[in-house]
Length: 255
Image (cartoon, rainbow, N blue to C red):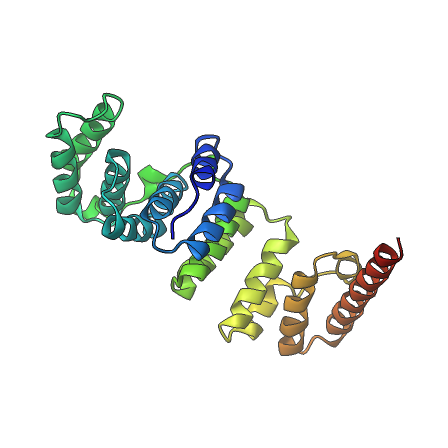
């Protein structure tokens, strides 16, 4: 089965308009429904590339390459991934192949030439240097969303942890990211370590939380950390939200 053209067009439009969160959500949905559609894998890889998540981009583009012939733009993106990984010979092979194509888009030519110049001037010790690839437009939310999708495709825990830490660094005031990291560490049997990220969470803050998933994470982490007051606050708030939902459903049924 293949994804409908309307979904593919929507994903392409979201990428073009840089609506990253929505694009990642749609990509995740389509890959779950159409795991053998190389077009979805290619678009997903291009999105990850533009978010500078090179490992995810490489995995998606290499998967796409086993299912369909990659577009020139996708081959260029895959070459970027190889450059970032220090696999310059693979990157050069791709760029050489593209430069030999008579049908190459004029818009891609200067981009490829710049990369060839980078390859010719790069030193061996600079091969794995990612500093030149940082996109200042990436927000904390981008990094947090990427961490979620890295978990979905099975990346190592340390990679996921680094993405969440970057989200926390960019938005230290967002308690949801700290709760997310604590919850993730709990999932990988590091709950006591995760406790340090929420140990200073005020009881009033817990009592104002409206996210049931956040509260479920906190319950596990505070239990592991032996923090009885915060555990009770989390349990009580979770129970309140569940009661509110029951009342809302009952009210909706009566109307």
